Image (cartoon, rainbow, N blue to C red):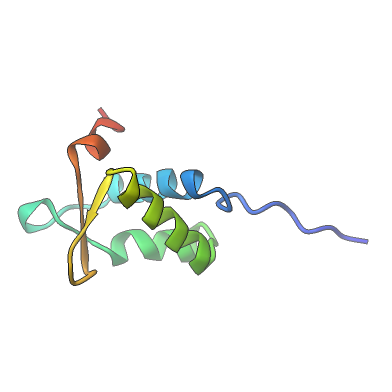
Length: 87
């Protein structure tokens, strides 16, 4: 019998921190904005996370004040609190 492994990003805080790492690694464009595809692509396809884990992690990062989501949902920006995580 084979048991399923625990999902590494089932904890929203761990998912949010991994999303922050992907955001830090991407190149911002005008006005320090980061395309949302630059963080969701590597997280969903590279890290093999689920869409639910992605949504929970993004919500956690926004609620903690680490990221600011553009009203159109196309971009995110680091907040001062989010930038401190990498200082």
